[in-house]
Image 1 (cartoon, rainbow over the protein chains, first blue to last red):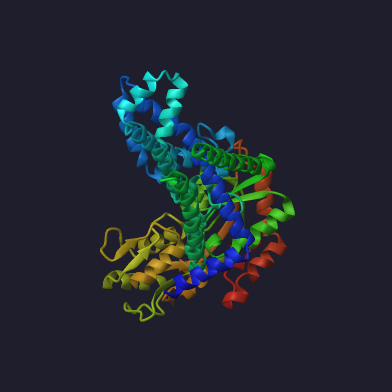
Image 2: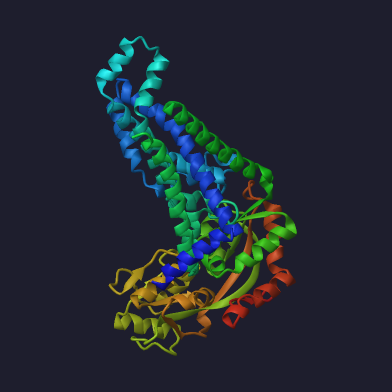
Amino acid sequence: MSVIGEGLAEAVRLLVTLDPEVMDITLRTLQVSCTATFISVLIGIPIGTVLALKRFIGRGFTVSMVNFGMGLPPVVVGLGTWLCLTRYGPFGALGLLYTPSAMIIAQAVIASPIVAGFTIAAIQSIHPKLRLQILALGATRIQYLLLLLWEARLGILAAVIAGFGGVISEVGASMMVGGNVRGYTRVLTTATVLEVSKGRFELATALSTILLALAFCITAALSYLQQRGR
Amino acid sequence: MIKRIFIASLVFFCGFFFTGLLQVQKAAAAEPKVKDIILATTTSTVDSGLLDVLIPKFEKETGYRVKTISAGTGQALAMGEKGEADVLLCHAPSAEKKLVDEGAVVNYQLVMHNDFVIVGPTGDPAGIKGKTSSEAFRTIADKGVIFISRGDDSGTHKKEKAVWKSIEVNPQGQKWYHESGQGMGATLLMASEKQGYTLTDRGTYLAQKANVKLDILSEGDKALLNIYHVMQVNPEKFGKVNSEGGKAFVEFMIALETQKIIGEFGKDKFGSPLFFPDAGKQM
């Protein structure tokens, strides 16, 4: 119990005094996870939209692959990314292993199916008659798509929230492809693991608290966006 | 109106994401690639805090950036064997010898030592206190008390397996034998929670001492010396290895000044040093 109390006190102290190392780690966590979420939105929403609207051969299989991907274990993604990025691996020439970019790649791979899956559900839950109506009113293709996305905005924001929540909390892939290098690829989750193995539980609790606060702030902002005027 | 606010906030968020992207890329591009050194090492040098002292000093002196990958010695050696690291700092001399003979690593240098100790619950239910390592292990096996093994092919795990082999006991699959599969710090915590015995390097134990209810029960055995070497991954065998950086790190680790820091490290906090500098000595 005292560890939890001291950890909370430590978290407040680290935040109030703007401890440079903790600030650095927190900022990096935000940058990596936000960038990864952004990329996954760019990938996931178009894929989700196409899968929701188009009928083509192999669609059912693709949708089930996306749904399967939503539960992709981060550590497997981490291993796959690691193997691809190692010096003598297929993408070794890029020299990306143990960089923040490698972490962004791994996290984007984790989040993209989540975003795509939620997008499919969001668009398909729009009443089919609405789609007909939009078309009947003479909307162009682009207008039709934008209107549909607009109507599905609640679900799509949920997709972004879920994607972000998935990557900011994951540790396996970040540890593997980032390497937890101090001042470079150390993020809140990997720092927490390290501090536990160092036996500094107060600091680990403090880092976890900051991670929770961060995740809460971002999701709260997105939820506000989602729920406004409702 | 609502729509406009919505779009505005969306643009804001996108902008935020983009700056993040740019900053991350900038950070990655700021230093030339060859400035990076990948150091694959054992958890004990990181968990004990030693590298937190040494690496910043090295980086400041040389301008290199060290990417410390803290893994078990097994993984560190495997990374060296495949040319995925530039320099290794490990503690499994017999396994390291193989890499030296294969020509996977060069510039093999003795850095420091400490020792392994057998720790267990304060009450010592198995009664191993004061016994040598092989006697202690035999007692643990005979009485079937919980023993937590690293189980990760690390230097400590290799040492532990060597002791089991020397007394011809195969603990694998026994009910009292648990493999944590984690680093030394986490394994000590597990041993403490389960009130079991484990083999640990002295440095990590001293660093964790305040958090665990474990005492040193067997120590000073010559078989339990824990010897650390630093070595460069052979740049002639692996063209992508940063040979300059690896060489600089090896030289730094055996330099007089660094050796002095190693000898002092931990004295203020634990009353005794965690590592004993050895560079230049014959083992």
